[in-house]
Length: 116
Length: 114
Figure 1 (cartoon, chains in turn purple, green):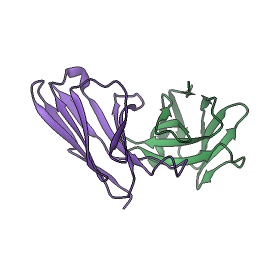
Figure 2 (tube, helix red, strand yellow; figure 1 turned 30 degrees about the vertical axis):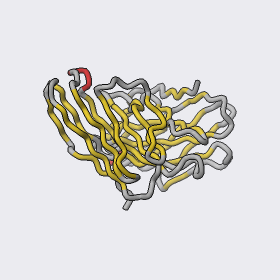
Figure 3 (cartoon, rainbow over the protein chains, first blue to last red; figure 1 turned 60 degrees about the horizontal axis):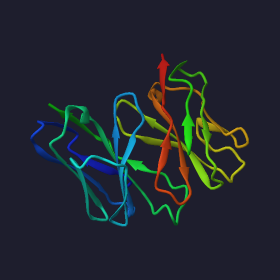
């Protein structure tokens, strides 16, 4: 199984809603990532979890709240988002980079989020 | 700071022909690696090819090969016998040893004409 599964694939939410994005992998990877991608742009890193602990937060607004309940699961909780937060949200995972350098990142298909 | 530059926002190629996508990068690290990722309209980012900086030999994966010029900090991707399924956005990506961060180029949109 070399898949990263993201749900839902599409999400429309109002600015007062609370929703969550889910990401799951069963490859035994210990680093998991959230990226935000605007149309025709490269992904922008938001958060990194390494061994279930938050290791990088790229100064993301607090209306985005990540959670890593276990080594296979990564959530992104959304609250009071703005229309400019509409984007494709990608999850990725890698093996422990500190032990296996050069390993590739596996990406999910993303969640297309629209904030209305 | 690490940077990746893709100078070709868009490229097109005829089916069965060969196309080369350009990428230059900058890093002060000696332990790094480079990737080309493909993102088709289906949105999923897929690894095309990987190159470790310490390896002099250029990586190849079937119809995909790279020209890695370390001194020039250049990492181009050659696609031979282009197929319609190769149409996608291609990202050149830099990774550092011991770091979780990946640095993406701006991408090159490849169109394959039948």
